[in-house]
Length: 45
Image 1 (cartoon, helix red, strand yellow):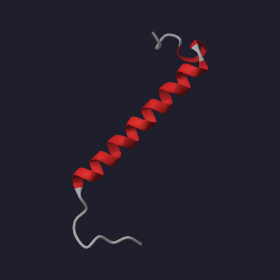
Image 2 (cartoon, rainbow, N blue to C red; image 1 turned 45 degrees about the vertical axis):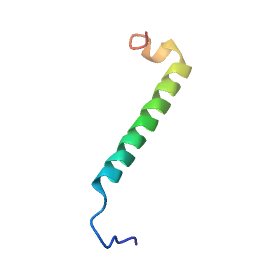
Image 3 (cartoon, rainbow, N blue to C red; image 1 turned 90 degrees about the vertical axis):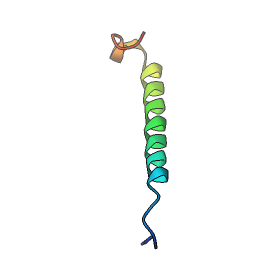
Image 4 (cartoon, rainbow, N blue to C red; image 1 turned 180 degrees about the horizontal axis):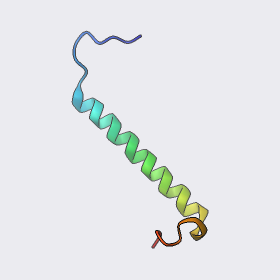
C-alpha cells in the first residue's frame, strides 16, 4: 500500500478529480450525441 510520508497535495488531488469529471462528461456527451435524438431528443439542441 502507498503511504505518503507527508499529507497528500490537496491541489493535485482536486485537479485529478476535476480531470476525471471532465473526461467522464466529455465521453458521456459523445455517447449521447452518437445515440441520436431518440433518447435525449428534448435535451439536445
